[in-house]
Amino acid sequence: MQSAELVVDWHALLIQLQRAGQSTSKIAAGSNVSRSTFLGWKNHGAQPRHPDGERMIAFWSQVTGKNRADLPMMRMEFSAARINSERARPTRLREDGFVTVRSAMHAAVLQRLAKA
Image 1 (cartoon, rainbow, N blue to C red):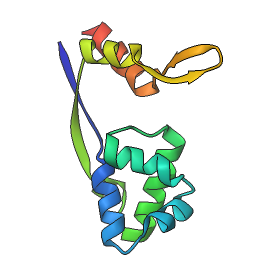
Image 2 (cartoon, one colour; image 1 turned 120 degrees about the horizontal axis):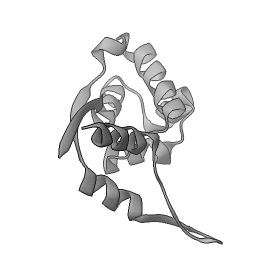
Image 3 (cartoon, rainbow, N blue to C red; image 1 turned 45 degrees about the vertical axis):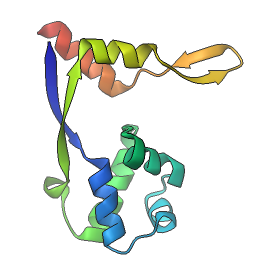
Image 4 (spheres, rainbow, N blue to C red; image 1 turned 180 degrees about the horizontal axis):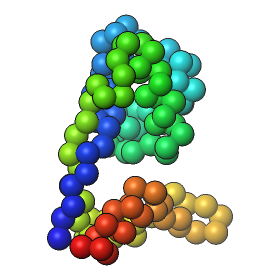
């Protein structure tokens, strides 16, 4: 079973900022989100934590003069198999061993799939 959800297209949003004359260092300073963090959204399809995403949206809105209704969006497909494989994938190594990341978005999708 698959579920589709509209999410912000962070790659497109960052391209719009760059086309508006914002360098990566200006984007980092203006949004208070580190350069490596937002480049992960742009280049690797990562999804931001809510506060980081909100700061980036506020900066994008200030630079472009657009409002939230104008945000570039994309449809993201989720399946239980994909979510489970992403949850099980070790993402970083700490002293206590592998740590898996379970984002709030994954939790929301799992709840939707459970209701279906």
